[in-house]
Length: 428
Image 1 (cartoon, rainbow, N blue to C red):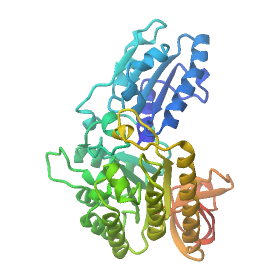
Image 2: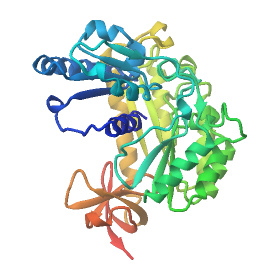
Image 3: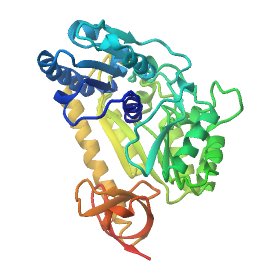
Image 4: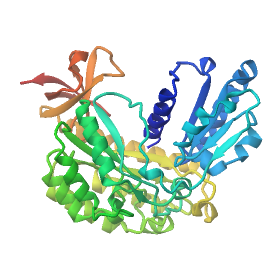
């Protein structure tokens, strides 16, 4: 979502006549778009601002803006710590960047410092310019905010409550993407299953998928993220029945212990979660499933942690995103007893990653010799002599080819499985 927000920020700057540069020391305006889910992101922001201080001393006309969730949460306190920052705006105030740019007085050496951190209740209805990354696949926001208030998460406080984008705006955006030659879209929301809230018309998420499926030119539809408590049988049937909807589900578990899930305020048990995965695989046997895992949540015992390892063994995900619990200001978890030291959290994270690597590699090995449909995304980042693309189950595949073939869908026979990707050759 932050990447998509950065596309909007870049689009607004481009419309104002600015061009991207490859080094901040060459820039007239620097916008740091931030995430506040983990402490590491905040540390990176402070490090970047420290480097920009030196540049601004050399070039006082440089304008610096801090955007995103850290900006929303820290507010004007950023000015106290970094007085050379000129503008702060939250994730629901990206449109305010237009006014800041147009107001020429803000681009003087002595321009006053501004904030845009208001609720902005109509932000979800606004259509902003975009500089999209790539020309094959695109992100499309369908809703903003979150109502779940998980104990570890700052999103409801930084991005606000759930609001659905109007159907007509989503359809117009996807239709425009199709006309421009994009082949794949990924629908974005903190909880896409909640789509339909605050809409005038009756429309839920499966209904939206069905409508988007009819748009000619778009070959693939993905979505992130689903909350397990709202993952419905209707959605399972819709994913099964619509050929364009990719057979890959990202469904965050976070922990395998019911006690920890309760402390996290996730509002489901492991058994309830597992039943949904079983139903999904029964209906769509070849579907791939990925998840998120948090290790070292406050109060997590060794027994709780073993439940998480057992969950990985039972479910056998295709891949996971796993992180240590990170203290975030303003969250309920900060007040919980039993915070663990970093050594314990890191040890548990290592065990999770080690176990999942074995599972992922074995599942990849099972694909050797099979022919898979791959959408070519471009040149491989790890080997410029090869092309890369993804299957509908979100497997990365590398193979020989020419850059001009980007955007084509081809059949690839998998010759070799690697830890996080596949290698193959084209077949007719």
